[in-house]
Image (cartoon, rainbow, N blue to C red):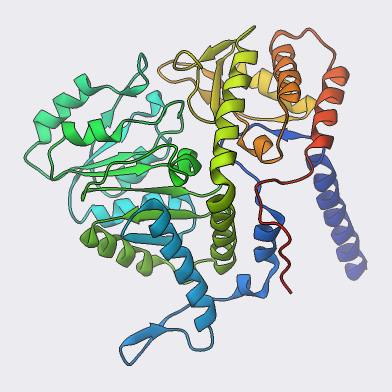
Length: 412
């Protein structure tokens, strides 16, 4: 009887998994923090290497894991490539996620300073930054965004600069509202030279990887973030640095808390790096062009928030709608996956869209127009749910092939 119960439970679970796979084929994700890996990158998770540890031993003067030197060398190739592409001296690939990496960086940097400046959550800063900074005992101040130019409010920042100019400070920039890249060159010129800046580019990773967006070189500036948003890799995180002291400090902090670096994710990331090294520019330009087109379509009937003239200069589109939770539920009922998020500098929620995943399936503009019309209808309620769902299913059926991938590659 007990075995029969387990067998029935197993069948039920497998049926649920199968149902989820079927459901995925009929829905569209408009979440800006998601993307789709290629089949080749995904296969890294199914390899035996995904279950393997890389625990280096010191034998003589060298650190390595006997019997897994080849696997270690593959990871070294990844780190070398990242340094070459980003034109940085050092790379760290131990981060398991953007939030995990945030925790490690703040833990490490708390040994150099007790002062931190973060992006105000009301202005689009990451919701977890304040809590992590508080955990490590930082004295916290905040950066605000000037929404006329969608960059840092330097008038308010100047007050903090004058207050802390003679001490060490960490500026930790992590913002989930990314309609415009921040002007880091201007920021560096405004602050004391001994201050340290970390810029989390999780949402903009692909645009910096392809050098469509660019950073200045500065010894106290470093950057990184997750690799599964505009960059279509695994749920992983990376850091790029030029400062040897910061590299050693942060790398040592990772070693204190990590035994497994999730080898399958590292291999999947290497595959994605090779893909984006070859196709990333074309993919990034496609995202930017189609996102601005999508914003234009939505703006015919909805209140699209963002920098003029295009309302967005990244992969994100924001709309200010009443009853955002109800609209989110309506979108889900017709096959559009999203969630409500606070509109910057307001006291209510709106919707934040990202079509980077749809662009990897090469969605056409005519289907983006239909998608925008469905979103509009979900807000204003002028079509039946069944009619809207049919339109989304018809689009989803076309988006079955992942593009910008390495072709004719088979691993045995």
